[in-house]
Image (cartoon, rainbow, N blue to C red; front, side, top):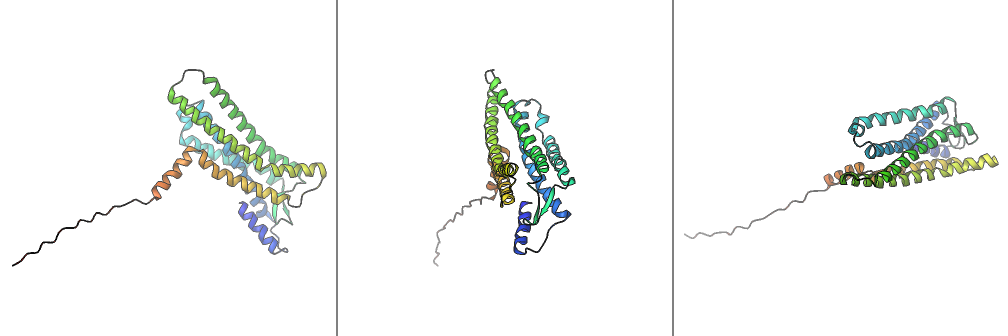
Length: 250
């Protein structure tokens, strides 16, 4: 979605008299923000998955494939519904110099709604779940447990720490946008490259997240390792047997 928006921006810079305004422009930006919202709420699903594995490991149904298929569907449904008010209220405005629809930095209400929904709700849920898991693991570490259960909890705790680092990185990548908002709130001045900074930070955050999740999620890493093993060519050995020639004389 971000690549499509940059393509419109590039075409607009090549032909300054063209305009891409209209309903499709708003819907395109709406879908881009829905994807961003779903990205952050995928971390919520990761946290819930770790919670089920560590706290509710006895309930196998909570770790079933069907349950998480439903959870992923609800994740996308919630993302579409969360961003819908911004679309209905007309917050996605066409900016002449950007050749795209964005929430203007002058629209403080629209930006606050977006920040609370995407960043505020997701990060608060993730932080609460992770803090509960860490407290639970430390509280039960002194109790005699099965060795296999302990090793599984340690592995999940390690992955959890990596996820916390990744979430911190993604939130940090959104910091330039927050900085631009604060500059406008206190000075009333919008930086010339504000929307480009916002777009680049969101794109880099999405790319870093997508690649990093492969390496910190054992299930995903196992899938990629299996594929690499299947692609690897098999070695064949050819054995040539030299038989002596016999010459018969009459």
